[in-house]
Amino acid sequence: MKSAPEGFPTENNLSLDEEELPKLEEGTFLVKINVFSLDPYMRGMMNPVAYGVERTYPRKMGGGAVGEVLATKNTEFQVGDTVLGDFGWQEYALSTGKGVRKLGQPKVPLSYYLGVLGMPGSTAYFGLLDITKPQPGETVVVSAATGAVGQLVGQIAKLKGCRVVGIAGGPAKCQFAKETGYDECVDYLGKTREELTAELTKAAPSGYNIYFDNTGVSVCGQI
Image (cartoon, rainbow, N blue to C red; front, side, top):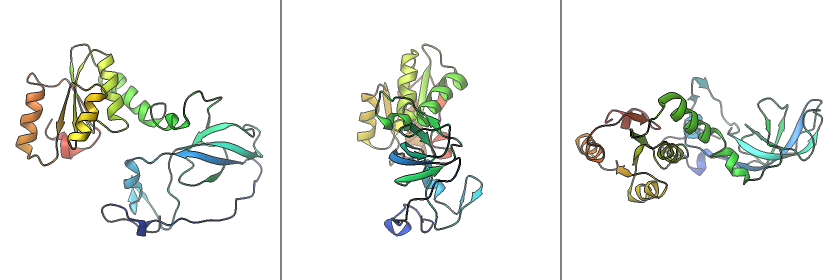
């Protein structure tokens, strides 16, 4: 990141830099990144103050990634290990192993460890089952229904016997939500507060038992 974006990030806020690979020191290892995650929360991370932490520029963008250990001076990690960690947006990363997890011999695409088997999957699974504890027959409404977390929440809720209503932006997203298992989907784009409230009421006349919020106050107030 060269600078903080105003609104949507542009190529002027970013730079692609090349540098020599870092030398290994005792206790470190070098990872070749195979896939990294690009998530909505990262827009907030681009701000000068993000999640209570002041950021400086230029700086490397952080983020979850999966890669392979190429060289090591760390006894806990061997060459060839597949690892998951906060390696950021780069092709190679030097790590001490802090916060890094071995993935064994992956039997699924590596990107799954950044999605359904990673942070989004854990958020959906534990957020829905441990916090809201859905029961068969209840009605669940989910904002950002087609996002990495939202689409999983909808599927898990259906498996638990719930009726599920999604909220998404645009006909294409609502169609996708239904394809993933949502019973209904409300398109919030271009709707006034009153119109959105009316559509949410129509989708569930008896009301909602659980609201799984992925957006914040802009939609939360309607529920």
